[in-house]
Length: 403
Image 1 (tube, rainbow, N blue to C red):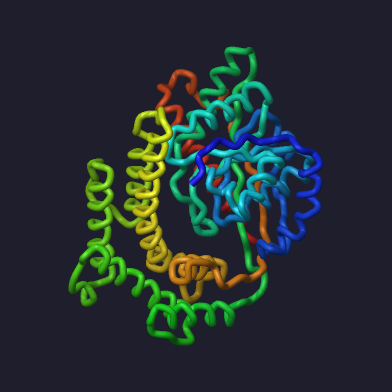
Image 2: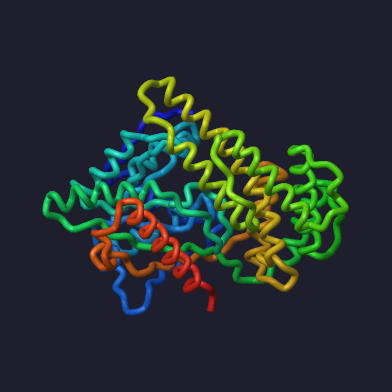
């Protein structure tokens, strides 16, 4: 994996070319239409006034298309903080183009000092509008959020300190909710996809979409049980099987990170606890001083991602257990779950159905409007901004529901 820093590069010609290709990009992404919505009684341009941190949920790889459409609507150029490995696609051609439409890189799981300096300088010197997906990974379901990471809020406060010292205003936060919706009935296609998953996993198949997904989920759980050395669990109630897996996953996280594990909670708690422990273990390492230190940091991140993959598998099961995908539920949830299972079983998404997308813009969060914010300890300030951002993006998603 390459770890050299890649800055954004201004190139009006490339930006114009990329904008001309947007209809093709939408077709590749399976997006029919993109609707931009703004909270009532707010002006879109006013909400996008700089300097700004734009935070959004991140359900698919194609989310930057939606965000760029937002910028094009009002004629505003954004910068995008993106994972370094994403720039290597198409033998580096994608990264070359991404840099020239405002993207710059960060090596996740390390203290990327070049990226930190570049990010803060964009806010301090250029009054930039920077787009960040603070969940850190693609893979959240269409209207579910993974925990937000703290790093970007730390950088926002660092930049704000420097801006205030220079007589400038703080950086504000703008929440955005992205949603993808199937506008017509695709039940037969979804059932067909679920049957193919059953065939590939050896699960029992029927004409019931939800029963097929339950069968596939059960196979995935069984494979995890084998991997973790859990025996004779098939006769146990489902919740007991999940509880045993919770314990096993937490124990492996503890062994890999050395971090103490709190008492077991429900599956939602497990995902949040596991993700936070993994992230904290990575971030707590000393700043890499040499190329070797950086390589070790990358290896730690790879081990962490393997653990995160097991948590994601349990999340797929949770989507059925807590009613995210049900026999009478909406087909968007079933489609998302199928895509997750296809990635798990086949290594890539096979079922592709065109959807309509919406970009719900919330109300900006101004630091000066937060009661007693300046008097809070720095850690409390970070927690406050993170939670306010989570709540605001969740509210955007609720407002973006069709109808």
